[in-house]
Length: 588
Image (cartoon, rainbow, N blue to C red; front, side, top):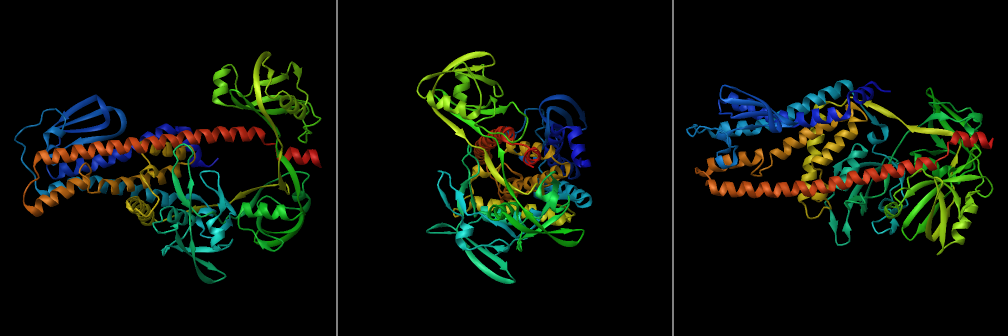
């Protein structure tokens, strides 16, 4: 395992989330605190963490404390707020001198500056140690053009990329006249696009094809990114170019017989250059025999190969009852990978349960064995399917864990084994260790943050507030990357600090930018805003902001729940998959 991945795993993901998320807020408040001290402002309190105080000590005029919740901190600056009603109810002298407008601006802006400095330090670390990135993300070349896209209401349409005439191998160099250098640029530029006409969204895509520059007008479609949250994003139906390498070779396979080796880089099949895993599989479907061109130790070699179709997903039953559906996976009594659902003996294992059925039978658990149907032993999948189908609209007795249950069957389906073509190899993409200069990292993060804000405010885009990420989403994203790679976590925190700096400088009353805007307005018009006006404005903005935070957090939680559903589905799919090595051993 990679050192950084092991390091992250050993120290605990939760620790890193608290440390970096809380640290980002703490750094921001530390900037205000140090600036205030430097400008000789009155600092009433500086707290590490939020909530009830665990420990406090007063040094000079400042109370330093450690609070219960360790996510960040806060600093109380009465001279900066100027409104006692918005400050905490601890002792603050009434004769505190006023401060200059320069002091106010410097103190207010230093929070954002410290976030940028923190982001820069993290960017320097990433620059030195490097960050692994998939080679596919680094490319701006199209690796596959999808033929169809499924819209929210299950309607299928021709993919915008195919309809516009984009092809595999095209290099996308600009979208809406903005340069694109990698697939992240491409994805963001399409999703954040603001162009549209009477027919709907559109994007101008500039590509290089065989050295010639071409412009295409592509009409992105809106696709639901999350079933629970319902958020929609523009996509055009393309996949990135991906170098494919042989990660493993199964025994007794065409690949082993032909002489392929682990590490071989796939270049072409029958002279057709390979651009992605999807394209590779499509070529396999079309050709039973072919010539595979690979690169090995900088030498180009060609091998004659053939492929076979393998049933790598097991057949299973889906039963619909009065109380919902359940799925049953056959567990065959013999151990060969190749099984015949019409002859080979098996028992049935519960693969999934609808919530309604779980309420009806709370004793049932995924993984429980169905050993009898109508008190007859389960023999094979086909016979079990026939017994269910024959009993439609009648009461069926199932024996689970040696106990009988009666239920009414409405529909029974035998879902056949899924097949795919194989030559007997496991393929993987390549990764690149990138040492990106820290200024470029900061610039790119700031650019996409500002472009997101611009799209959010544009009536022509499809970006809305539900697409934003609130505290639950940020914590979940940090936790996810922390479990994967510490370097990725550092990059995420670097981006978070750039975002915090930019958002805090927006001219909104409850943000630092609002304080700066107020000070400049008062200086320009040579009069102070009345306290009651400022209180009303700030409280109104605070309520709006809290409402927005709750709104965004609702969609964050929906996304998290959807990911949990996906993980359950992945676990179910893993139970259905047959080890391909066993398949080849059983076949040949």
